[in-house]
Image (cartoon, rainbow, N blue to C red; front, side, top):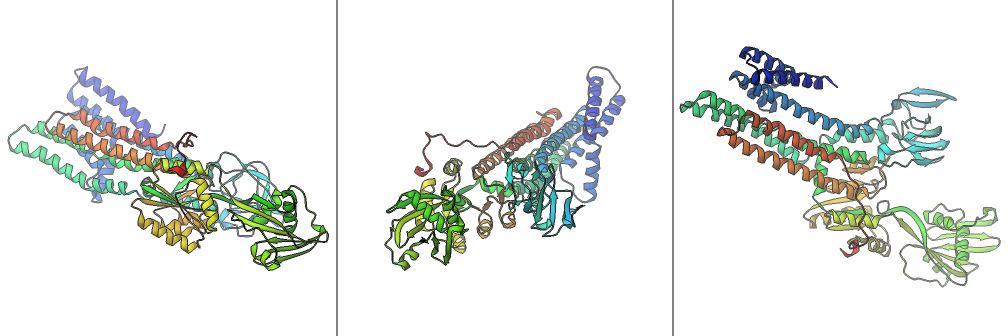
Length: 626
């Protein structure tokens, strides 16, 4: 229990004693005044101090000023219980706000706690513990089990499992070994590893993430800015109205104490706490809920914009697909498919091209490189090798044309490798980029969340892009685009649509488009400076399913914010009218202020939970038919 909570408990006990003295015992008014005044100062001295400081700086009209005037006024006219009750319950409302903020900061602090405290640098065979910002690119650091990786780098010795949950929301550890890239902020679980540093501390992933979190509070949603501006005019207006409620009837000869009491009740009811607390709190809780799932949102403005999105534009490679190839089709002529695949694997023995790797992975047998006596790369066309005296060519159509071979030219969705052995055409193998698992269901979930149109932009051949778009149920596709072409197409799409436009990319080549869109979402952006800087939302792993989850969260947050605004204003304007005519007393005013604030805060706290969506049932209408 902190000091604030202790004060509330003590104040509550004093208030209870005072209420017994006031209603059950015939205690002298001066003793009651002493009891309630003591309790009032215990629970509200900080409000009084803040009011005095604000007045000294020329900041008059805020909730602390309203509370001070109303409660001190209640004591002046002899309404001691009401005066202390208003301050006590106002502070209870503040406690609910602090509790909500503390719980939300808990999920965000998991990211802040990623910041490493030290790095073990290997120098001259000895380990030296230094601050992470003292480590230079090229240094080797040692990370022991249980330690955070302090800087981005590449493993040079050892293998282990990494806990990436705090960054990505992924609970399954990631296995890494020599040659694998690792990022700062992840935790080494099992074994000692040595890492060659590839980025300075200021450019490391964890530093970029922390900067993003710090900046998120400054990017307020339009609704937040409106409420702040509204309160700036609303508060002076209600103070003036309260003065009119008190002064005019007195000038007309009515009872002064009655109308002063009504004016004080009017002030308590009018306090805008429910709005100025619950609206920012709703967005803050939403950002915290998303961060717990590995989705970093740069501010409430992007959360609000996402709720208004009607079009989602996506890059293909690295976003909808995994950026790796698999053999998807084989057409053998004069040999079996197994023989065709073996010939191609032999031809690609020394190639590191992604398509070549996919062919070698598909071939189950081992190829003895020592049996390849000649190997020539034919730039822009393919390769030529001699294996056990047999000449093998593997490449594209241009290679077959140059060699004068007859070849099969059927249209296929993918990259085709044509194979010829000793001057005889043997067929072709098609390799396709692997579509991410559940992507079709994710597209359907986006549409279920109100996205009216999905668009795919790709630099691939038209037939390849259209095949992927058709498989996933994407509404519109533009293919054979250069990076600059993607930006121009995005501008055109944004001009044609009335709602907000979201762009989803892998965060490196798509940086211009991410910055241009109303909401830019970077996928799989761990370690990508371009993504963190250009995007408005950063999904820290490759889980495309988090996009509809983020859209669903944005709808939930904005719905709850609007609920709080409508509820708070409706209750307040109703009670303001009742207070003016003496129907509502100070106790009702306490509900109109603190009660409404607590309800609005509890409602805003619903934003702290981000429920993962379920995929549409098989009986649902498929995405491609929508």
